[in-house]
Image (cartoon, rainbow, N blue to C red):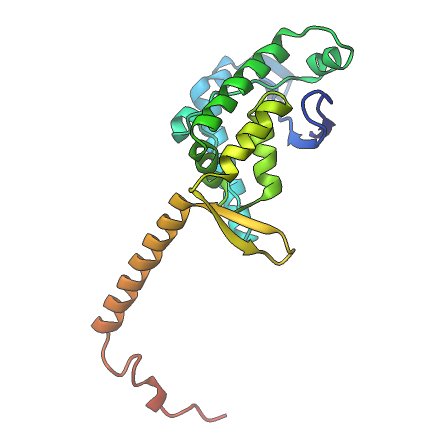
Length: 225
């Protein structure tokens, strides 16, 4: 089921598109539904499904030449120094909109506030996290990420100012949509190393090939029409 929902106004006023995948645990045989298969609830199996889904999505993103990737692993496993923030959920969102207390929402805000302080102290955390999923990003991408990992306008502004002032933020100019794009210093250095490695391999291959293979190819007669 694909769900398009708006979060509580007190948290974010953008739409989040995501999918709910619901699986029955009962076997299905000639006589209909049978006993529940508890094995399908194993954590290891869920992780395997998540990994395969990420591989499938990333392969499709690559086919479409979209500069974005997803990662099924936890933030800790990805090496990102941010706390996970629990989803608010529709019930808690409605409580917030009515001005009622919500323990889940308070937990979310507390984690977001701690993450915001981490970003203010070390803005490279935000840049590393964003470029983990996409090599370049826009101002809007950055703003959405920082908004999600801060609590309140005051902390959001402080975190945004810290990231914008960071020497690790590298402007790349405007893209085809005339949007300013950025990357991180680490991502730029990684790309340069990859380009240098590819160049060395290309030179090595060219040197190993017979002279007539590449350099003298212009001397080969053209095939008759």
